[in-house]
Image 1 (tube, rainbow, N blue to C red):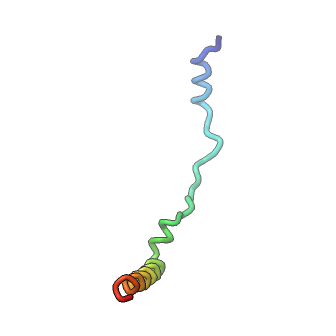
Image 2 (cartoon, one colour):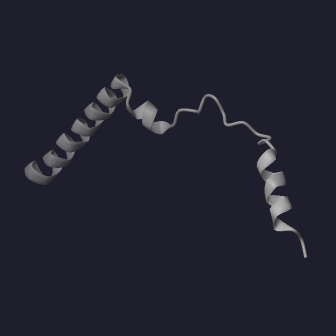
Image 3 (cartoon, rainbow, N blue to C red):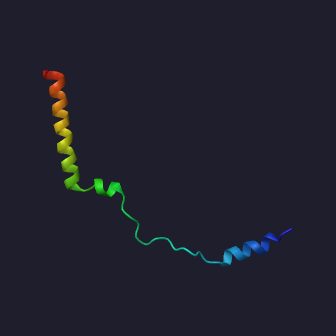
Length: 59
């Protein structure tokens, strides 16, 4: 049988070989928080809304 106490102390004294990354990459939520993109998406959304309301109510 293996001595578990000796294995546990050996694991605790070793350091991690890989360090955590310093700069994390920014995801798509960062891109969506940009004001020009949000203004563009709002304009496109309003145009689609007006076109759908025109089709539903006036035609």
